[in-house]
Length: 352
Image (cartoon, rainbow, N blue to C red; front, side):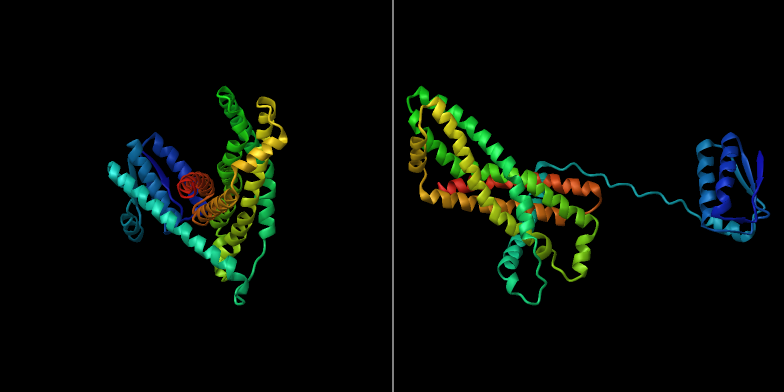
C-alpha cells in the first residue's frame, strides 16, 4: 500500500498536482492518505476526496484515510453523493393524447398570433396619435428588405410556373380545339390564385425566415427584455414596422408577379396557339372581372399578415441558444406556408 502525506492546507492551488499523483497511485493499487499535517481545506478539498472515493469504487483498490483530526473527519463523513435526478419516463401516448396536445398547441399559437394582430393594428392606426409613447420608424427599411429585394425571386418563380402551366394547358386545349380560351382561363387563374399564393409562399421562405431569425436572435440575447426594461413596447418597436411594410408590399408584389406570369403565358399563347398580343390581352380582360382584382388584393394582404405575424411570434417566443434561433426560423416557415395554403382554400370557398 502506498502512503501519501497530505500538506498542511488543501486548496485549489495545490490540490491539482496532488490529485494527479494520488490518482496515479490509486489506479495501480491501494492508497493511504496521511492527514496528520492537514489542518484546513477549502471547497476543492471536498472535490479532491470525492474524486478519489469514486475512483476507488471504480478500480476496486482500497482508499484509507489515517491520522485525520476530528473536525476534518466530521466534515468528510457529512459529505453525501448527489445523484442526478432520473428523467421521468414518458408514457406511451395514444393517438387521442397526441392529437389533443397538437390541438392545444395550435390553439395557443393561434391565440398569440391573433393577439399580435390586434396589437399591430392598434399601433398602426392609433399609435401615431398617442403622444405618450415613443414613435419609431423603420417602415421604409423593412419595405426595401422584405419587398424590393424579393422582386427578382418572386418574378422568376411565378413566371416559370405560369409558363409551365400555360404550356401544359395549351396542349390540352389544342387537342380539343379550344386554344383561343387559353388567355381567359390562364389570366383568371394567375390573378385570382397563382399570383397571391406563390408570392406569399416565397415571401414566407425568404422574408419571413429572416424576420424570425432576427427577432429570435434578439430574444435569445435578451435584447427584447432590455427593450421592455426601457418601457418600450416590443410590438411597437419590432413588429409594427414589419407589419406595415408587408401590408404595403405584398399586394403590390402579388399584382406585379401576376403581370409577369401573364406575360410568360403570352409566350406560350403566341408560339403554340397562334394568339396575337391584342387578342391575348382581350381574352384576359374578358376572363377577369374587376372584382377579381379586389379579391386578389385582399388575399395577398391577409397572406402577408400571416407571414409577418407568425414569423414575429416565433421570434419573440424563442428561448435558449443558437438552436432556438434555427428552430424558430424553421417552424415559422413551415407554419406560415401551411396557414397560407389553408387560408387560400377557405378563400376559394368564400370568394368563388
